[in-house]
Length: 337
Image 1: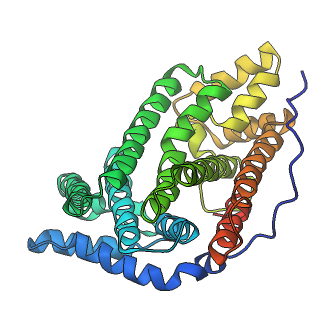
Image 2: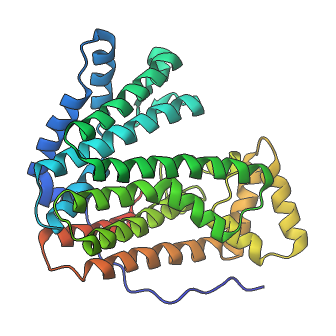
């Protein structure tokens, strides 16, 4: 059975650097960081020490950049835009801290995780503190629209994780369910960023909806790129086969299983079900996915989503913010990590 063929996509834009993407909001990011630092302060010495450590793990700041670029696109960055970016980052950081506890992870962005340094109890309490600070930041300023948008994203993230765990036990996931999972797990927060940026500066519901949908497509493409990394699609730091070790059914594998005959499908699923996979197991699954067109299909699907986001952005007037968001769509599919 031949792998399904997607509609042809437009040529991707030249992959820009993150500094190119951030350029239109570089000054605004300084104001955001001030909001973020202030929101994390505490009179409790231990808590203040831990939050200062968290601030060292700055990362790429993709989410605040998305909020600020969307705000610029919709009329201009305001004080509410800074609060929106800080709210998103506070709630996102809280979920990461809790994720590290659940996964018993020792590292986060190259540094020791909070649970590795201060143990699980403090890590869980820190996550709760960050969550409450985000809620209060919105409530103190009456930003109920921002709070509703971000809270809904956190709900979806939790549901997506739980659905993925449920499906990993039975390995009965199809493409439709896969997209439901990554829409909730990953795209929900990205779409919340673009929506919050628009909400912070305009009441135009059509514009807010358009930016929310653009964020959704960018988030879906971002997650497919991550899934491709697991099969060694490019030379990156993510360990090859980590999704397979966790029995996660990602798009390349789902498509390959769909196109294989019953005998080969059964053999591959037997490997996926193993509690511990060897390097040979991972290589076997990787070759199977490549041979049955899973990688090619996932790459094309990812590019289609990025192209759709770019086309939707083209409907906005040309500005540095719009061009930066278009560049971000190109970056998402071309990134190496």
